[in-house]
Image (cartoon, rainbow, N blue to C red; front, side, top):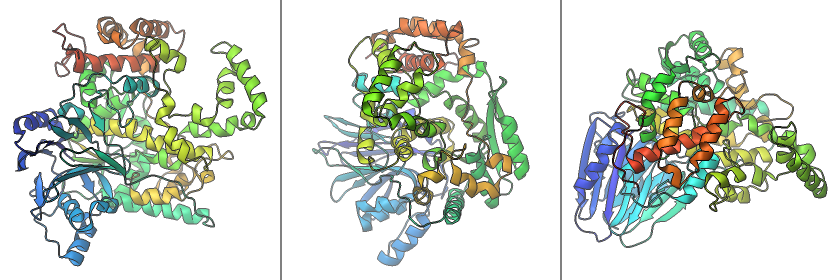
Length: 631
């Protein structure tokens, strides 16, 4: 796992070594083992920071293949050995390295751009074709690895992180509007309107003087197979997951795993221990009662006979490191669970170079409790529209906080307007107030395309696909990548494997989430039941509960007030409104922690990247008075 910066001149002349080198310095954490900047052709400058995982002594990048292709590659191709043998057998391909990166270049050379569909893994790449003078770039199917780009009059820039790009387009109002609804900036947006992200499962092509062209190479679609029994599906899922974990264990450096108290990471750890019986596992928790899974994780590790390393996170830790966390994120992300992930990755990085983790299981197999909502709202949804309209009017007349109001609101709202992802922070009315009454892009704009293509599917499948397209790459995988790479740690996600997806996509909705069962991920639990102690396999969805609500009423409350008071982000958000929410939260009048945290993370981001009033590496979270360089 690594990081890269690439510049292709629109004029096809010169080089940009100094600027590319500066971009690499900003992402040295992604690959501290090697740093190289090359100019393979006039007008083409490629820079690479390497974290050596496979073929440690070789496979330096940027690399050249067949005298035609120049490659920067971040990630892993888990079937590279099979592809390498196939390319050698069919085309006589010759390789100068023993790693996976060159296999991608050879695959493009012999199979063309469609070769990306043959890759099994997580990846982002930039591949320059000297012969055609064309750039090919892209991301893996689920968006595990990031890729940003910016088109300027001088040419095209690509980079693993936004901080390496020129930027300077000012804050994107649509990105901000989505952020306060979703708690993350959805693809393809970034908070800088001059920079965009290549969406998950997409390929990009560009020729000097031309336009960026984006094409989807992967689209997740649920396609249950008729006539396949539950037992066969269970076996298929277990076999696919076991195969994926074995593939994800391949490395020339030490490999460990993250372990929470839930079934997803426990299943990964159990299968990984089949390959590596002395596997070391890492868990994180908090020093506040009710906000730690460390005991559950320790119990699982002990039951599997694994080495267990816990990490306890305190409010003091958060205050000290939060600016650095925000800096690594690039864009504001208000998911509090990224905080323990940062400290967990730091602990693990001191002992291993690679960790396996359980991200993606909930989206593939139906793990979130919100997926049960269609069963609860079905009785109202079946009523005539006129009756639903009347109930909708009744719900509007019920005061906030009164029992039944929320249910009627949800039950009388079509799924397409009701569900836009796991995190729902500020509603339309609150968002209008927070954004100073400025017109804002509708939150449904992020999900319209998904719903338009899934009208034939059941509600649960449609909700899962919304999350697969938005929440998974925008929140879950973004925090996983940034928080692990902050410590030069490669995080691998065996659930987000093409073979596991094929197995998951064939599972009927009723075997994922069913009104007849109180549990989610029904078939996945059955598939891993024999691998885990029964209490673990049947444990309800736990999530990664973070005590933000407690912190804001205690140890972090003063810092929050100070940040809101000093922030120059008031031009974008109504900070007086945010302070009123914080005060009400601290008085115990309501739990506004999610809303307040969303505003705080934007203000912290603004102070670091726009005002330059907070130094993320100064070791203190308090704003310091320095000259403003706001865009």
